[in-house]
Length: 501
Image (tube, rainbow, N blue to C red; front, side, top):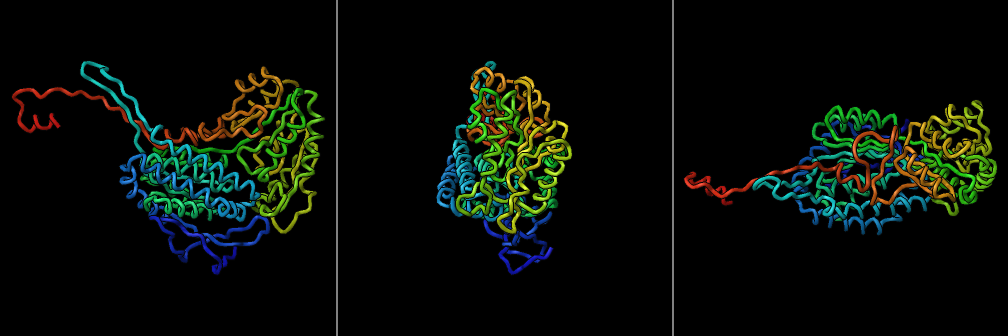
């Protein structure tokens, strides 16, 4: 691949400043809407990781000793800067990731919500106290930061996932090394700059760009105490195993196959509206996208007809264009993968009701229209694999229990939803489904950041999840049991003085 060194280059952020670009390896950053190279990014390896971790280790001790309210004050100023720079950050996201400006602004809004949770760190880090557990003995607990933590973030949410990780870790008193996707690196550096503008000391947040070499260096580094990851299940499992083997805390959120069960008593127009937005928004490149509709009983034919009408009306184009519902996929490889999945789905018995390949692309970018495949088998590749594109599969179920069986037999457990007018059906589904996030008449059940977030099964490996659960992940508990007695007469003077302090 030819690298144009005359283009602007995204570099590492270490010790509170941008690192000047070197003559080392770089990668092109593409605009998915045009396929054109818009800038380049420096690819760091083990040396860059070593520099960033060493700087973070130096900064971590003083930052951990900083009072929690002072740490929260920095995040409060950062929150104000996110508001102020929403349009700028949204433009960066759209330019490198491809999602619509409206979707990108929504990502910033959810990022601000994650900061709100981190601002409550003083409350979350309170310990417990037990008086007189034995004669003259008291016990109390408190939580302490881990030291240096690392985050490895995906291309589909370059701001929200990063912010939810590093603000929680930093609020708890840790230093953080962020390794963003090399496809969408610019927003991460801008976030680090804004944190610096908010008063964060240099070294507390570092950004290192790179590929697998940088990731492996973080996983193996002796001074990295915890690793957070969001990405595919295959990589999540590897990161979990490798990090755990190195004695680190690890949270690795993987792939998904999110189901939406539609009962015959549901409002089918509302269900169809929900399906197209949840399946095709952001070109299906969301870990919480609905990729499977389970139509129960007589709901099937009408639901497919209504969903197809809406899918055909979905407007595809560049994310920064007006009145666009869906932007491009992230890369040519992603486009080829989605096209191949559609072709194979027909070979394996699926009925292609809406074929996104027939939608003429609006330009030279990585565009494909929404696709709807009916009568998909649970044995098919389309059902078993995470396509990560604008493809919605429809399965048929006899009744609610059959639908629950379909959902629970799938190895993923990120999210699941039910559309129904029956409270009894909703309660049965909510209690019986094997998923970390559940929606009732809500298609994408991502909870507010004041709740924890993380899937079940092959959608999550390791410790506590993100958002409200994160403060437990980024700290460890210490329990102190103490007894104080009066000095005993006859002790040496220095013992008596020590007892009185």
